[in-house]
Figure 1 (cartoon, helix red, strand yellow):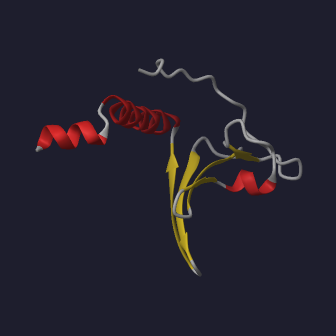
Figure 2 (cartoon, helix red, strand yellow):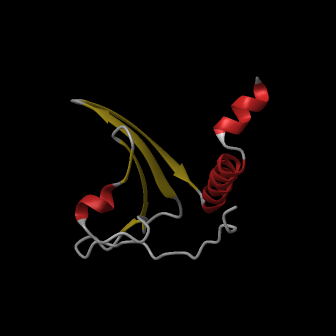
Length: 108
């Protein structure tokens, strides 16, 4: 079993030319293409961005395929961000403690 998840906040990446833009990219190198998004399989991406002018953050989910793309953006308050983080961690815990193979076998 994996050790319990702990989190230490990481400062946002702030482009020198745009000091009001704050990107939350984790411990990745500070390259422009990496500021844009966390790439996930099948050409999808997740981006978390905050303008220093606002007290919320934008969560952007996107998918690209060939010449087509779609994205959805949600503005979330700190409480909403924490609730989302909690649900994501619950899902990660469930996947790790109840692998699909075990659940499928139990359901049959």
